[in-house]
Amino acid sequence: KQEVTQIPAALSVPEGENLVLNCSFTDSAIYNLQWFRQDPGKGLTSLLLIQSSQREQTSGRLNASLDKSSGRSTLYIAASQPGDSATYLCAVEGGKLIFGQGTELSVKP
Amino acid sequence: DGGITQSPKYLFRKEGQNVTLSCEQNLNHDAMYWYRQDPGQGLRLIYYSQIVNDFRKGDIAEGYSVSREKKESFPLTVTSAQKNPTAFYLCASSADRGQGGYTFGSGTRLTVV
Image 1 (cartoon, rainbow over the protein chains, first blue to last red):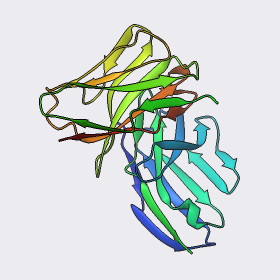
Image 2: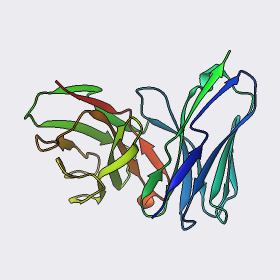
Image 3: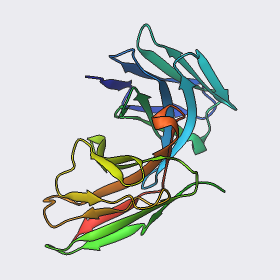
């Protein structure tokens, strides 16, 4: 049974810091891994989608990596801003989309 | 703009009442999904449909029903049999059975009064 774990559960950083969010999964038989952002009371916004054959994807200040063999992904956020404050969810697709519990990020001005 | 529209944003249900949550997509995606989100429990799959006129139960289908008469629409009915319906409900769609990634709607918050 696939399990997805995100560490840390919460993170508070000052504005301008570079930061890394971690996601691990137990079954490497996945089609892809997707990172989402969720603001309080809102839906999920897709940030990055990494196919199983890819090692990383980049969008603006965000970079996500995928290491299937070790069951790990990281989301790197460069030069964090208060507007980045949200909950970040990773999810793996291997016939069914399985979510981690999320990392709640707070970026202080 | 292509996307998923969920309505209403907020819904209040009385005890013993059925309510229906709407989900419409214009992404031409074959597959659609309903998730429930509760604090501290993450997202759980209620029902999914990979093609029109076909749908399957997810992990927590009891007390819920769905229909898929059109490709664009996947309404969820929360029946009186659902004992704890207060939650945030999210609809999603995907192409290629998830291999192309998922798109989510903005959610409906259901509260029992």
